[in-house]
Length: 566
Image (tube, rainbow, N blue to C red; front, top):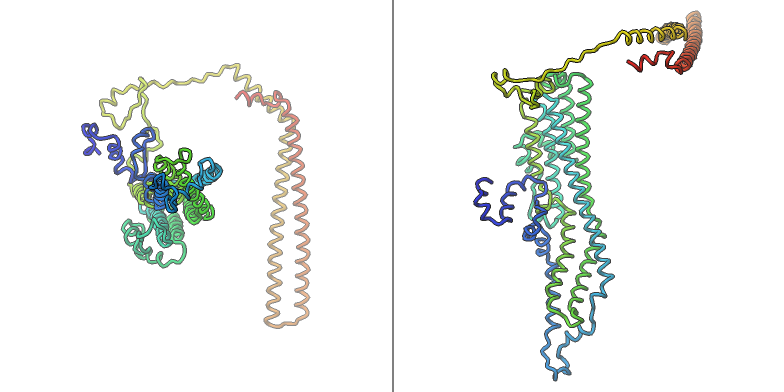
């Protein structure tokens, strides 16, 4: 820019040429290449590339309609017969037939109104689709930026950051390749002759040189029959999980940036959520492209527009009160350009993944995200990271009100530095305030003693100890029951193995079963005692709450004035 646009050269250049030079190299970094200055409306009039002029003048339909009007006007306006030859049979036959069926512009009011309404609504729908897909692409950027930010802040190793990030970037680039491949296979006119190649070729030429995949991962991905970006995201999640489960230096578990397991869990959850949301945005963009403007809607708009232009072309022949005018040869092409231009621009916005200036700049999108993610993942830690958040890393306020950076100052400047004196706050309590607080404290203790709350607290403590004792007995009974049941099972197993039919042994077994039944009833009784103790505890707590509410109604006697003052 400095070599091309010097001060003298800027004076000699036209303003539109200077603008194009200023934007050179910058537009390749933008999602939408077509950028302009809204204030310079006159300059923008002379810009043709990327406008409706460029699109309409390449349309065969526009030139066909204009030529039809020009031919019809020429035939009607040329009449080689003299006045005395008007009765000749073959004189002015075509012009005469046209004159028999005149059509005025006023007769097309209803048709023009309906067609204009359809075109306006169609254009609005296409623009909404354009902005919706743009917002989804920006959301895709945001997810990748968030993930790289988390990795940069909490992962100490650049290799671990890149191990998680590279699969996401590979999924991002392969997703855009799949869009081009799909449109090429469908035979869309904008992609004719622009074969993006096979997935294997794309991976070998674009993905592997960027260190996003290695050869065996690429081979597995090419043979995978399902959604390619989705399996890459699963690899990223698996890598994240294993890195967080492995101790340093092979992993990130218990590193100094993650002080506790709670913080580790939060970081993993946040990263997983961002990766899942990243997949969701990919799905939204893909589904938006698979759901174009409904064809019946597009067809009726297209048909209505063409019919409207034909009627306007015919009615323009009868301008100037039916006599016709040469102005129609200029006015009708302008009218056709406005109508066709509006629809063609709408069609262009409905599919923003082409190569025009108004389409999304896919190479720039991929390049920007790759460069930024690679930089933030592989960037070595700054020397002052350990000081971040500490007091010594903050700017110092001088007595004159200016901020200074101590690290950037020399020794002499540090000695001459004048810092403002910090005011020391002294706390002085008067004896009257202290006596008042002590009196309120004594009044509070007396009120608590009169309310009986300490006695109720002892009752609660006794009930809690009783419940603990009953629970211990219940636990011992359960253990005894388990041992009895195991003994019965053991005896029955021995009987079945040795085939002992001793009557005495069977009687002992039945006795053990009876003892087990008695023990079960005892446990049920213990549970009833436990429930009774819990009910008693609830009643006691209600008594405490009732007395507390009664005494707390008077704040002066219960000590609330002390609390409010402190």
